[in-house]
Image 1 (tube, one colour):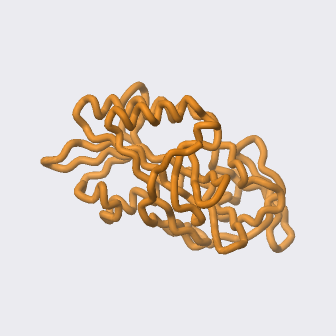
Image 2: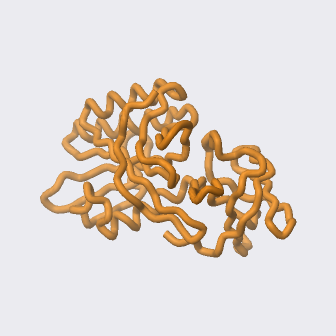
Image 3: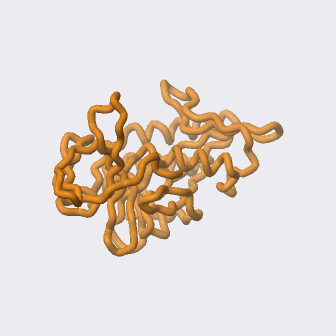
Length: 236
């Protein structure tokens, strides 16, 4: 998935009100960018971090920049836009790049299911069970090469896991896919110390037949693409 317009670098001044970030561009201008991430962004919103923002000239948008990446200045990047995983995964599913799901040709996003919810992707193929795929953006890294989800309490995430388990009980295939928007991780785990309820819901969903998949991403200021499968391991 390519960014629509070339990204420009800057330094984070502050993130506030969840969806706003003040950034100092390299030319000295201070701008306010949209931060498309409702999570805590633990470890990703410290002042003076090098970031990359995407400019836009859309008259319908009040903010003329969107915060897309954190540049860790060691060759690694983190994508902070939580809308990116679904776009990147959709392209990968259409190209048959997710080995576990490559047999499916019909890919429908945002299909209503469960209790007033929408599944990220519903995959169908004659002769195969319908597959419900929920996607989570993973950006937290606290130690080593371990990526963790969530970075804050997510009651909505626990609800989605219960609904996936119900889809499996009805005879469908159900998949929880953790998409790691970092280039410095090789494993994924649930951060049970941050949200014990979500961790318990994840264990229950796995026991009920929900598949747990994880993939990393290739990230640069040019774009974000699906990478390789990662193991889902036990966390804290």
